[in-house]
Image (cartoon, rainbow, N blue to C red; front, top):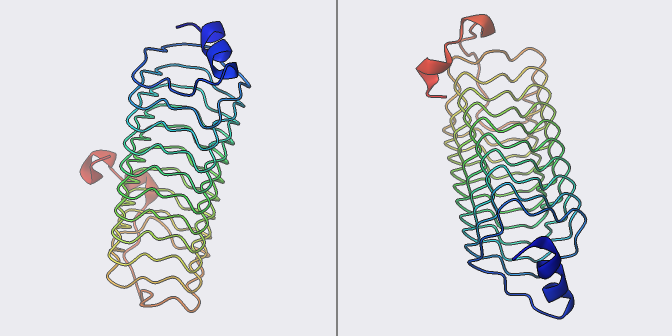
Length: 238
C-alpha cells in the first residue's frame, strides 16, 4: 500500500491498517486520527505534523520515523519501537507508551503531560525542554538522557534509572523519586522543591550547584561530587 492508497482508504472510512508494511511512506500533515496501525512496519515513515490522536500504534515498528510536530494525544504506543525516531515538538499528552523503546530518540520540546511511560526505554534520548508534568515514568530507563530544562513537575519517577542523565535546569518539583537511581547525574540549577527522595540513589553526582532541595523529602545532607570531565560513560553502563 502506498501513501495515496492509504489516504484514500482512510477517507472512505477504513481505519484498520494493522500488520501492514508501510516502510518509508511520506504522510506529512495527514489526518489519521483513530487509525489502527497495531504491529505495522512503519520504519522511516514520515508523519510530521500529522494528526494521530487516539491512534492505535501498539507494537508497531517506528524506527527512525519522523513524527515531529505530530499530534498523538491519547494515542496508544505500548510496546512500540521508536528507536532513533524524531518527535520534536510532538504532542503526546495522555498517550500510552508503556514498555515502549524510545532509545536515542530526538524528543526536544515534546509534550508528555499526563502520559504513561511505565518501564519505557529512553536511554540516551534527547529530551531538552520536554514536558513530563504529572507523567508516569515508574521504572523507566533514562540512562544518559539529556533532560536539560525539562519539566518533570509532579512526575512519578519511582524506581526510574537516570544514571548519567543531564538534568541541569530541569524542574522536578513535587516529583516522586522514591528508589530512583540518580548516580552520576548533573543536577546543576535543577529544582527539586517538595520532591520525594526516599530511598533515592544520589551518589557521585556531577553537580548540584544551584540545586534547590527546598521542602524535599529525605534531601541529601551531603553528596560526593565528581568532575564531569572525569566521568567514564563505560563505567555507568551507558
